[in-house]
Length: 354
Image 1 (cartoon, one colour):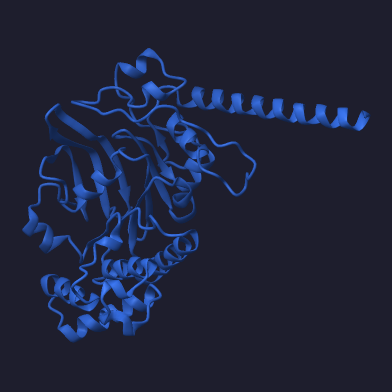
Image 2 (cartoon, rainbow, N blue to C red):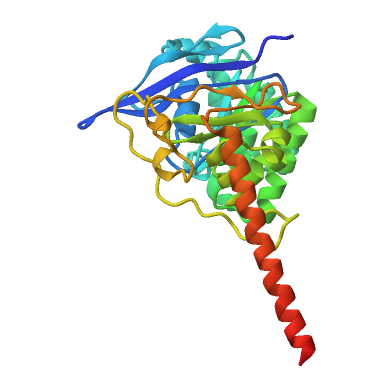
């Protein structure tokens, strides 16, 4: 097998706070292969963006990787300083599309000026070559090449988003980290953005780490997915396996909390409570207080990621009752549906007898 492009292994990240060491990520593991679109899903505060920032050395000053490794093309990078990251990783290998990326463009510079500054730091290309490359990226994301000298305020919101993506693609990186790249865009523009990313995947063989709370977007756009809850990876595997056969209670409840065009009349799931704030080591299941099927064991130690019995060898879930809980959940849903159908039939008969 070929070596993964990116490997995150047993990663723990903590922030120093007045209340102690706040754990944002606890023993998280996943891999991304060349040309793979990988989704990282979960509620706000689950640790998704923290993982992304740790990959490019963008943690806040009070944050640190306390254990685990991040390997890019087989090299550990979690200990790199800014100079090493600039030389070996940022922009030309890994590019970043941040949240609220429309605010990331310098309003006082033309887009071409911003691109040239990036290129001068990370390449030996001439300014003419850099401008030509930016034109190519504008064309890929559906912007007119003639617009590269425009200022950000001359673009609409959707066009600014595409300009940011063009800058991320500018040096043809092997991996793009996109943190909620379609936030604040309407559904039509969201669809267009992902079409552009799909074109990039086919044309440049670029990998994508897509971070979002909207798991339906991941199911539609990605090859594999990791679902996080309060610092921990709850479930991980191919999109097909996790969609069709979720096993962690948070994973299958989170999935059912989003609408599905195949089941337009389905009642959406509600997950009561909020992710906890975790101080110190997370030596228990972080979903314990919100899980209807939790037991004492869930509070005594963190569950290991164990294989799910299906056709995907990468499919794992971190739950002591992953099979039993899923069966109970399915049984409860089937019972509720049958009760609903029974009520509908009774009403129909009554109306007919009148």
